[in-house]
Image (cartoon, rainbow, N blue to C red):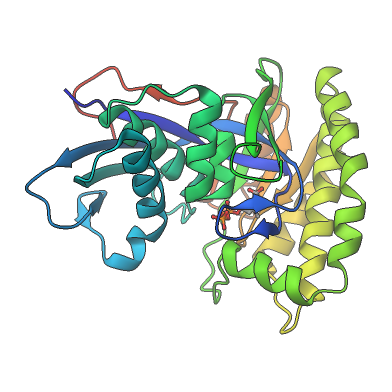
Length: 328
Ligand code: DP6
């Protein structure tokens, strides 16, 4: 019987931003993330000889062909490794609190790599799963692991995969500030391409990364959350600065993102450990101590509703779901 596979999302503290090779999703730089418990995807894959095309059913809704793009990349690789031609039915349930509006390609493509490979009878190592998830979506390579993971850029399909760094079994957490603004979206894929091709700031970003990564790994091994947070915040700001130099320029920030970032700086003045990071969207993620999550949430209540504030703690790596139906 095919099983449901669960992968949790991850948030990068050192961002992946730019591809060396678009076809195989080989990145320009190493990145480092924290996998979180609050958001995950459950996926089941069935290879079925009665199917004429691959199908993707996401949260009980059949998806159109364009949504299948990334999924098919992973399915094709699995078919080629397993020596099968059968089409697949992919069923996925995203566990994302209502109104979160968070993209979930990291958890989605990692869960798919696990579910598709096991449905095809392949028994892959974590390294092989990470490579398989990567060709669906780069950040998914890191969701194979719980805690902190580093995606080592490598130079081709075989050398580009994530490795575990630390289980994050210490006092670190994240508070998601969900900003529901109707912004015109530039996907991370398009945004990073435009930045690599046109932003004069992109080289500056690349040049500063080795030090950020080295310092971040030292901070993690010392369990120094002040250092982890401040390096992550500076790294995110540098990534977002590259988009302003692109042609045409763009930003993922909205007025509400700015409100959240200012609130984080205010929290620091009140002696809280709080730093922010942002990805290819307006939501702000606050890196803080798990033990201060509730206090910080209380402090932000005058600015944001309860639905907008979601607590997250370090989460596990890819695993089978121990039941016949997943919970949603
Ligand atoms: C800003 O992994 O979504 O979140 O590889 O094109 O699918 P593709 O991009 P994706 O990019 C994530 C970019 C980021 C930073 C990060 O997660 O490292």
